[in-house]
Image 1 (tube, helix red, strand yellow):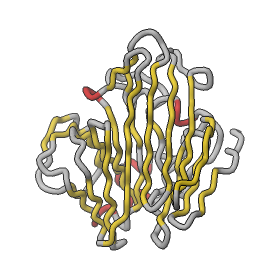
Image 2 (image 1 turned 180 degrees about the horizontal axis):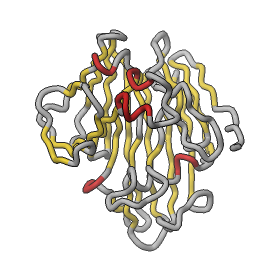
Image 3 (image 1 turned 30 degrees about the horizontal axis):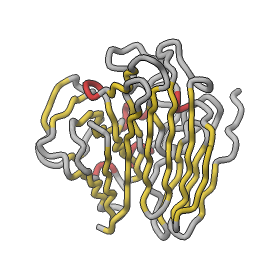
Length: 278
């Protein structure tokens, strides 16, 4: 049996409450002051060393899913189960900023044996802002897919609508087809779509009476995922009927938007979510 994770870093400030684990530098809980939780965590999530945490905002890096050409393991890369180092915790007004760092000395893979420094800066306040910076410390270019795989709480996925995606091209991973979004995104079955857009997305939630506004910088894709009932039942760390209460809206660079980072250079991707009344 795997060892339980050390306790998370707790934030309880005038602007928000939050929890962040060193494993994966993963923000697992965040709620602005006076608001309902924004990040979903599975009712059967396993907080154990070396196991991915189902929920919050996992960091997918340096490949997305099984990689562009398939065969990369574990899915979504190796850093989300690595022990990152907390190198700074600072107050900035009502915000709390945590900075985690990871290097090849702490986590690597025979499938991707390159030197790197990875930093995740988590700004926890009235908005949640995550900034992922990849630095190539080697002497040859590196090829990186990445995602900030945010699980967002919704009152009922069947009543949820995503605005801002109309007319955007996307790869439908469920059917394997290239498509263009017609109208707003609604949900009536399994959804796994890699949109080719960096425009803001609004998660309109009539059940909870709020809108979640998601914006990114340095990301070429927005990924939208919900497993629906049948697929969710196959996943041991998604609780019964949990699928109705979340949607993943991720900032990513995947597929043809892979990032090439030259020696000595850095690439940064930022993901931000804030809550608005409906």
